[in-house]
Length: 314
Image (tube, rainbow, N blue to C red):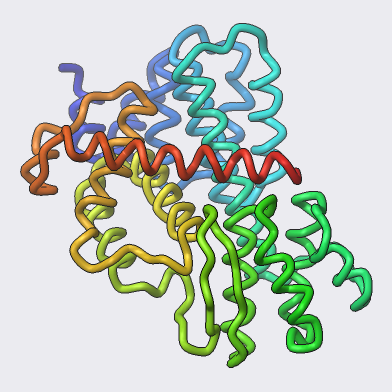
């Protein structure tokens, strides 16, 4: 095994990169080292400088480019790049599915980032907000309105919010964003919502935020520990976990289900990338692959259904 490959395996990315910089090509290994070292801006410039020279491993190199854009919050640039890639003829699996999942995860992260940093780009009055909440609005417009709810007196539009929460054509993730807004304003009045054809009575003040659930945190820790040496897979698995948590809320991962969820999500990520499972997969998760395959199909269906809902109003 060449020296730089051994250094990469051992996580000594800086040393590996020093060796690689004296050699022509090796673009995949170079971009991997830059990404793992946290040199995201340099990685972006590196890709843009060598993109026309890449003759092999293009898909993997492009993936590191997109992940680097995401790390510096260049979401629009990343989404545009993926859209351009998806417009190319004859994209084969699993690359096509990977690009679509990457697009959705970046879109969701962009939305969360805008909410967290109060970067809403529109301002509607109460009547306009009510109109958006009570109709099958464009996904982006509905998202912008949800951002605005945090600065409004939600109690004055609770009836319209309930219409939104019961609309079967609305993204389940957007509904969870609204529920978190209700929690943040300590609303004590119960609301009725519909998700995945199930009806729930939800009392905001009696519930916790989506990602505060203890079993979710345990599941996240399991993935962090097992995928620590595969940061790109860990990134994907963490995004899937967060997405699932928002889709199923107000249901949550229950105590005792953590290993099942973590294993199914890791299985999903490996399968999507056509990679073999780690040798210690069954031992670490104390499970058999057959059982995990069944639960992974449930995870996959949730993600597919959510994408269809988002596409309806996107």
